Length: 116
Length: 177
Image (tube, rainbow over the protein chains, first blue to last red):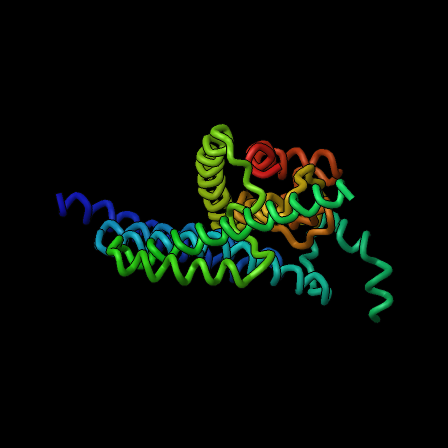
């Protein structure tokens, strides 16, 4: 039984590590801050949750606390990403040349001129 | 005069509800954190949670604005299932983009509209959007949300709302309104 739990836990850990690795790669490849924040928000959430799940299978005593960490992560991670992205947008961080539409700047054109 | 009294009692009621919700939230969190249901743990937790919830006002917890109906609880479960499915999808899609040598992105900032009224429902919606395929909430102004989209499907408000918001909204609508 413990061997079975170990296998599941190990697989979850490896899966989480793979997503975190892809996240790192994405940080390098994405052309602008917003793309990087996107990659950071998603891969770290799923990657860390998988790692926590794996740790929970390997150490069932810790499962409850790991679960709590996961819940906190689910709430704080997207919030911090959103605030970072908003800050980047407000200070007019450079955007990828591929950017197709920008409704945000269209709607906030006057305020940005006021600030400048 | 009569109307004002009614209004006041309504206010007290929602105030009481908020305090009760904060108490439940703090207490459950404390018990989970301790991982024990010994009398001393429960006692200390109850006293501290009670004093905090009595002393603070206007706190937001998961229960704020939650509709207590059997249907809402059932929909909450469905929402969680949908959410994790979308989170998986988001990661696989990003993995595919990041691993393709050509980096097939088509980014843009779109504007979507939500019909949700409650602050907690809106917060969960914004968070859910951030964690789902290719979208990241940037700014929220009233019922308008500005979203960064890695590969744009459509740039008009209705189309984007349908693609980004509608999936979550149908659940959150029942849960929070």
